[in-house]
Length: 592
Image: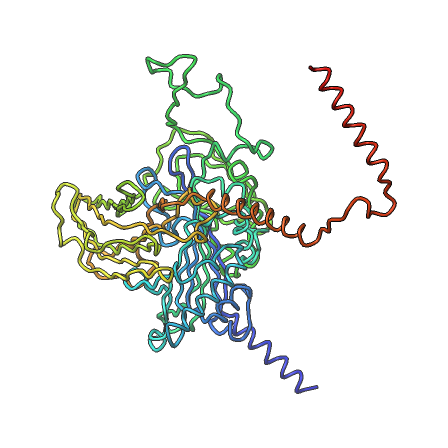
């Protein structure tokens, strides 16, 4: 009995030691982009001691994800679900400096530990298949043709031992065609300790999230080793960012289909000389719109998540980036703290009370967001179904400092670029400038085996625009390789841009660098006439049916005389034939 007690006490000590450094923290930042748009940034961070995966201890890191990473030998994971387009010219810099943003659709990159490239790719396929089932996404379609191995763009965000860096393999895959929907949000919420039942995660409703003008969901898992000598731990960070249209979000749930507003309720600009009753020209919104959490998100915040560590329960969970002179009404016993900058205020939520925030309509000045470091625009050029080109415009808004960044493109194998046509020039000069592209890594495609990988280190002078162009050929696919909606086109993954520090040296951590993605492209390939195979199938089936029927009748049917059939009176047949012949003669005689 004494030995059992000692064993039980030792297990308690082991578990308490394992979870000594574990904690959970969540934060919501609300920031008006324009008087009619609201940016909502959710962040959830979970920490667990590093040997928890091996010891099968899962407190804040969910077991469903932890066992997948352990089985696939994945040391660092980054997963993104994104829809919409970030309007950098109107909205400014991206939230989190673009570190938690992904390209349109699904983007995944991970550091996998393996002894060889073949084993690393096998672990990568295992990881994709497992994550596909966990998040109800088509990640299992990330095969060798959609997988690349970046060399210059990405760096580990976690703290990995120097001895293990030689066995870590970086693999990157995209699915720009993937449609992000509620089926991906539900498993995302299940990874949280409170699973959307308490805390700021109660605001994440699929109807509001996927009605946003732009939204992205991210999951990052990485090892962290503090510099002051503390034990290493595993950090899992989940983030949701969305840009909501305030008027559209306030539409009631019983009116899911927007209906036209009556003419007398429209806000029209009547100062125009051509304005009349038949035409309404929208009036620019000059004052901030009134809104509340219940109107924009459909519900208030249900207290705070009790899974939060005791040392973090008194932290500020909701922050609102508006000027202090604007009126903000709150309820639920929250504690307000106005920042010294005069442009932000944060709230500490009560554990059980509902938290509601209401902002009345006021004429206040909206906080100006910082300007993005680079403006990027990517499009197709040329015409026809045989050849084409890609043109990327990269603009440096700074008037004093040049900027350097990594430019990373992943092209499908049926899009065959010509490297000798790759040129970079300033928009004001027609002659290419070889000093713009400082270094480059190029990996050509192999038909039906891998895509094209292009990475460039580009430098843009101050207040200048660089035009990056190249030509490509369009391949003709096999009949079975076309999707059901082949005439729609094929999606090309967005380009990834990583901004380097002003000194030109790469940052030590990916989270400290600025990232941005261009929009995805829609490539039109030569499409055959799919009605021809249908016509061939129908004609062949008809011929085979006629031939088979004739041969079958000849083989099976037996011809006999009428008098050989039992029970058949031949005299009746003769009388009927004679009567028909007489009637036919009478008819012919009458006509004459």
